[in-house]
Image (cartoon, rainbow, N blue to C red; front, top):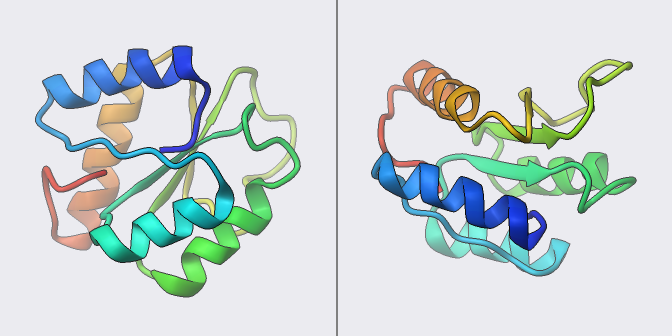
Length: 116
C-alpha cells in the first residue's frame, strides 16, 4: 500500500483487523519490488500520495503481476475514467468499501483473505 501516514494508519488498522497482511513501500520502485518479492495479491495505492504517477505505477505493477488487482484510493470523486491498469477506485475515507472491493476482486480471482 502506498499512502500518507494518516491514511496508512487508518486503513492498516481496518485491514489488519480483517486479517489482511499490510505492507507499504516508500517509493514506486520499492512498491513494485515488494509486490514481486512478497507475492502480493492486491495493490492499494493512495491517489493523493502518487498524484500524476498512478498510471505509470499501475502499469509497472501490471507488467510484473498482470492478474493482480489494483485499487486506487481517492480523496475526492473522480471526474474522469479509471486510469489504465487500475481495477477499481475507492474513497480513501471508506475502509468498509475498501474491504468490500478487495473481497470482490479476490473472489473474482478465486482467492480470499490474501490481500496485501
